[in-house]
Image (tube, rainbow, N blue to C red; front, side, top):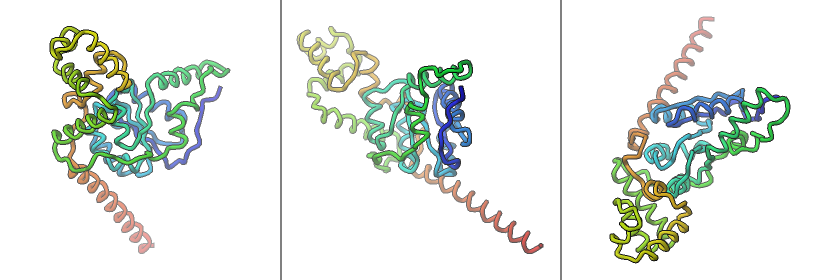
Length: 286
């Protein structure tokens, strides 16, 4: 059985960024298999990522991470996410992750389960002479590599924050507005705040909110339904707010980001000028 290969312009390279090396490595292997004529480069720090996206304005971008843990990365890449096709691959998507994907242009997201199926299929291709029953070409990753498109929307986060705290405050405001749009009642908001503060068992919530047991159960159930979340404490703690201590990318101000882009452009211009001078000198000597 031959390994799948997608038709794609040779100039369209792929840039990978992630905080989990095994996942990035798996995506890189799959991408190289499906696009043997394109370069797939893995990058693990934000400044280098900005540089590479500036050097390759036509490259597609794949982010292997949980969006809620990389607010600073998405903020720094505000322009790049508008100019480059982008796909997010994550192991879980919470309420705040969906908000992140939406406010940065309705970015597509693929789950690890689908990635695992692709990896298994690729491994079977090496041993079987008949199809394994799963077609990698039908996965979201394969569709993205075959027809990379720019995000459907635009960033809703203004490029005006030069410190971490104001940006995180703004993200908290966005999630609060989203909850209001979903008609979350004041009592359910109080319940969320109580859970964030450490009142997490039913008895603790009854005491803190001064409400009967039946109301606590009903209101919590309706809250989870409105937020489209399962009844798991971890989802509520980390999926209904943005936490600075969870951020895994360094904060870079818009001015610093622009400096990185400018330095890359200046180096490229200097290189072109040097090549032109060398060419003219060779022609003159000949």
